[in-house]
Image 1 (spheres, one colour):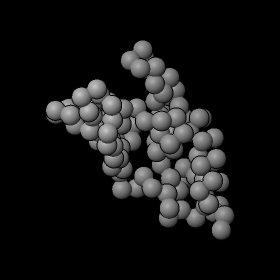
Image 2: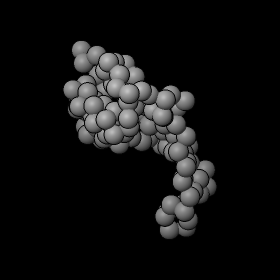
Image 3: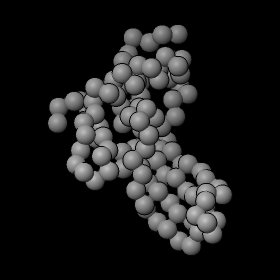
Length: 109
């Protein structure tokens, strides 16, 4: 059941950061009432359809192929807890743009 691998060897840290802290959305395309946003970190895509008052009436997410963690050896709750700890060690604040965090692969930048 439990694996001897670190969560970052099982699941990408960049995905863990987005799961833990939320995505860093940027506008990708906006056409009529449909807008598409793209996460700067993990490249997840969010598609929204808005009504005339700019309220979301439909939303879907398109994740990168290896974003899901259902095939890992660790139970999801354990994996999520460990990934949060690792992700926090590998993040750094960047510029005034949005006050977002940036994933530092290997913690060396």
